[in-house]
Image 1 (cartoon, one colour):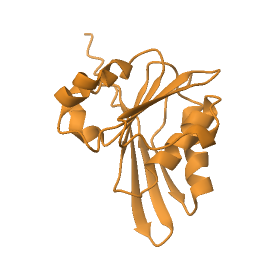
Image 2: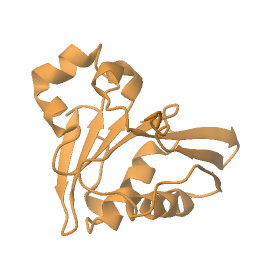
Image 3: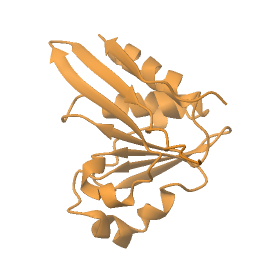
Image 4: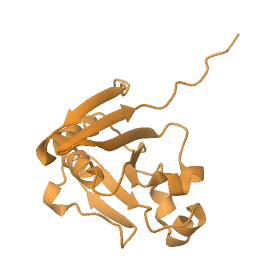
Length: 153
């Protein structure tokens, strides 16, 4: 499977944000973690809808787990774990819910507001930043994990 490449995209609609998520999702495999950062209303959940769709989950099934902390969507390609840490204080609070077991588990794990649980994120986490640029325009930046040093000499 090809490595995830650094990308910068512009989205001018919900459909384009979903399509960007679908494009990344087709490259993901079970066990991978994607951290989504951006302000409220930036489009993180729409991006998740695209990733879920790439795994065979209907986008209509996907909703923000802000109040439930985590949703699980079983798709024919992979299970999608969608975690929203907005209401959490820290990693210990996520651990108390048991949702921390989704991170690096048997599915694709998507985490909104990951800065609240940074200590739980694997070093190979893919970062997706979604920012408002101007009215109706979002900037989406996909940052793959930094390659490990290959100092084997």
